Length: 172
Image (cartoon, rainbow, N blue to C red; front, top):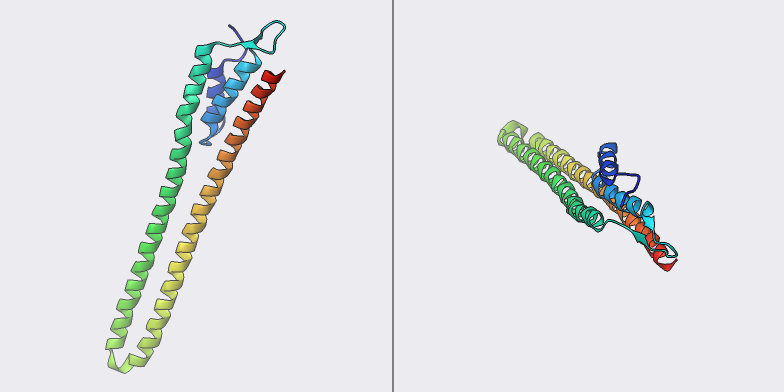
């Protein structure tokens, strides 16, 4: 069976058109739709002739792309956890440094009262900085996960639209 567009070429152009991690899967779904749209119609029927091997190859490639989407989500979560871990480590280092400075100030007899006040300020600033770092890490993780959710929703909508087209053809 022959048809105009080459699914491999369509997939390659979809992959090169975007750095988005969902592009390979979306391209494969587009290839399946293109294959069905350009398939030769059976006379007096809503059925079409398609190359079984070609459809199975596209579906197998799509199945392989789905774990990539899951891996992308895992990577975003891992990246966010690394940022959060670094932020906590930095905050702990700031707090530890503040405590060391506070201890040194308290040890000096003439400056005992001033040292306590200064130590409290340093600890408060360090705790504030730690809270800011943690909030920033949380915001970053949330924004990355929101983007991934949007990407996955787009893929789901394309899958649903494709299935609806197929169902429409079956009922015709």
